[in-house]
Picture (cartoon, rainbow, N blue to C red):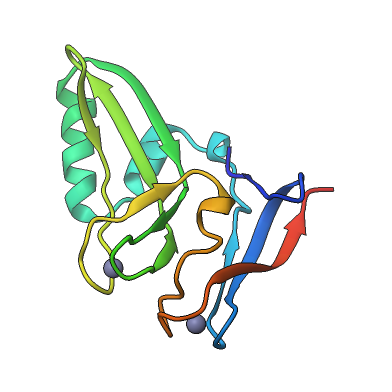
Length: 141
Ligand SMILES: [Zn+2]
Ligand SMILES: [Zn+2]
């Protein structure tokens, strides 16, 4: 968890993306182990609205399972790429509560990227012309 596999075949704990056409670049760090915290700790770091919803479920319902991750999200509409928390709780008879993350630029719901390759070749959010590529990667030892 918390590591993305690059096409070079290594797990990396951080990388930088750039545009083939303009000076856009952005760094991502996964220096973060989801196992270092309990789920309740993750909830306590949430924004107020999510925190209230998750606390209510954890307190008043029968929790079946929980999941926490820190994935990369992308906006299909404008190409914005962001790393954000993701939390999910399954409760009662299989009901699901999960966090959602809306694009800070256009407000569209962002989608989780499961592999770094899914970011590469996206259209650049700045110039809308170039393609996103990996410009640097920090690898595990
Ligand atoms: Zn660009
Ligand atoms: Zn957007």
